[in-house]
Amino acid sequence: METKKIKEYLINNNLFRKPKINTLGKGNIHNAWLIKEGKEKYCLLANNNILIKDNGLERQYLNLKFLEDEKINFCSKPIFFDKKNKILIYTYIPGNTLNNKTINKTTINNIATNIYKIHNIPYKNYKKFTKKNNIKPLLPQTPIENLHQYGINRFKYIKKYNYDKNLTKWIESQLQETKKYVKELGYFKKNIIFDHADITKNNVIKNKQGIFFIDWEQAKYLYNIDYGLTYIYIHGGFNDREFMQLIELYASLEKLSPSILYNKVKELEKINKIKDIVWAAMVYTEVKFKKLKKDEYYKKIIDKRIREFKKLI
Image (cartoon, rainbow, N blue to C red; front, side, top):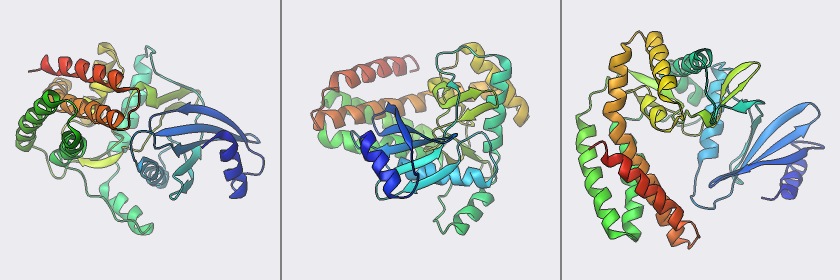
């Protein structure tokens, strides 16, 4: 949608009377606008469908509603969701992301505390929420189900078009090895957490009121094996000092050994990186199929991630 059409949509649907609209950003899947009316500010996301068909906006809306019910105050409040047109509106959080910034121990402590709070929202609360809203509850995801979602199922698409036969063959062999390893992982069925699943400095906003998390579309309940810290280690953008402080602070909240927690992260690094390679190869396949002029860009990402993966073998 263009800005003019967004404004018409908001007025015609009686959502706002005289909104002022500015573009916030354009992504591979969603475009974002800032809506101002009076003193209030909101964010609108619309699915642009450029690369990947996605129901992430609905997931984010439901996650924000659930968090609102749980009185979690470090995220946006959901305002409106249009399932047909794939439009989501929620309250705008002012401030700056932590992207490319060095952060102190106090900030890291606030991040660790927020992560701990959401991890400890009981699953029974989620079941009550889904019943109240007449939604089918999602079962907590097991490690092997996670590998299927972000690795094996995505690979089927890569294999279907097979633009790079050597790459396809290599990924397939690595996924088979990874599947064997994941099946052997131990996890406690009682140890279920609600995980944001995409904590990066770019998804953390700091302002005078505190630390806030944004972009909740990947959040879900899952059987815990690493408290979601391996993903943060790889993608979070934290330097070594910051990440070790995060490990130490989170471990103290969970009453765990920081060294054991860090060793678990390193143990699971390889699993996460093969999923990263699959994602890049999936997008590479998509742009090749749609003849978009980004195939070389994603090929470079694949090559870089394979080099990083091979260092762990």
